[in-house]
Image (cartoon, rainbow, N blue to C red; front, side):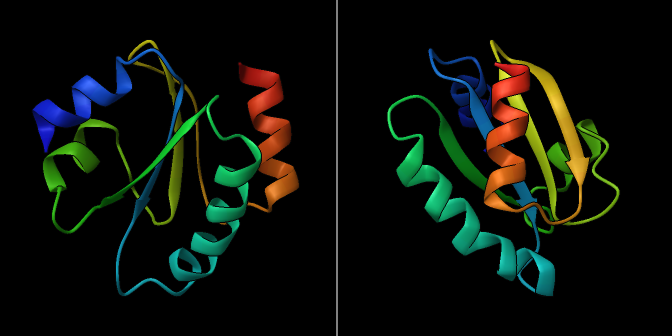
Length: 99
């Protein structure tokens, strides 16, 4: 995943990464919100999910201490990162402030 991940975050679109775990209740609740957001920002932003249990090196690299953790990447750099669930409106505000 590492090489592919680097290719994605260095792509031509900003990327919102959902660091999650399959056993995490709030992560499951965040998924439909991210799907709604994806429809709204289609073509402008890529949203991907990274399972921290399957990708521990990536989780460590980006200092993911809790799940869900959302990180916004632009040109390969983290421009925003925060743990905890977010509403669609909160995410839209974050995108507007950081992109």
